[in-house]
Image (cartoon, rainbow, N blue to C red; front, side, top):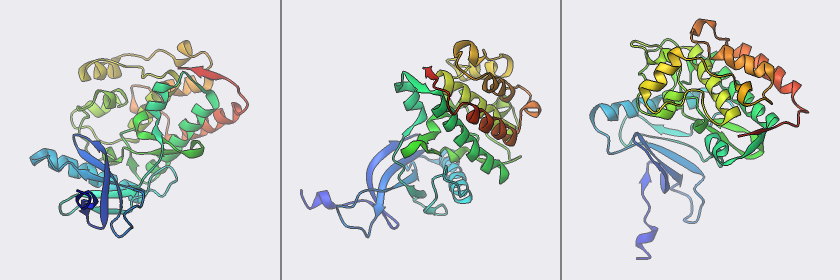
Length: 291
């Protein structure tokens, strides 16, 4: 039994460690270079297409893995976990990145009673910086939600969820799989023949900021259909009505970002300018937001 316990599954140059996630599309394992000693810590992660997928679902998962590999290799930014290795042209299909030791923003918000306004604004501004970099390279994220923002040491963030990224104007598949994803998705993304637009990321970020300040998104229906209808026809209640400590300018920016018409929403550069100014104005603000 002792000898058997030292047998490890390997893929390419990597030894698999503990399973982190066993999802519908992907499996994620902690990993280490297989040349390392037995007692090495697993400082990397391998993300693999779920081997149980077949046919069209397997093709969709591989397409998503390819999008993630492309984006994480393209963007050299401290808020993007870099790509170290990938195998996309033959099975087993996988990519490798450093392990990021940090919890997600959605878990932080769900387990916190309160948070300082300055910290929330800093997190939001860091996310906007990553999206600014993405848009400058002609791509969009299209997966912005609190579960895809990881909080690291010292308050730095890393943005994940790149399997949903697209080049601008590329046709997209409407997100009809997860309620939570739909709550953060712009209404135009659900249209037949929808294409990737920078303005759709702006809308998602407006929902993201709203959620970060209140601990919930503005449209929280129990079905995809109800959520899509709300995105298309309902106006969100102003954050400031439920969160009176929200800066007025930030409340106004959220409303602009959540405009139903993509052409009316601000650009990410305009959002960045506003967020930096709001952050500076509130550096000494002792306000604590109740969640």
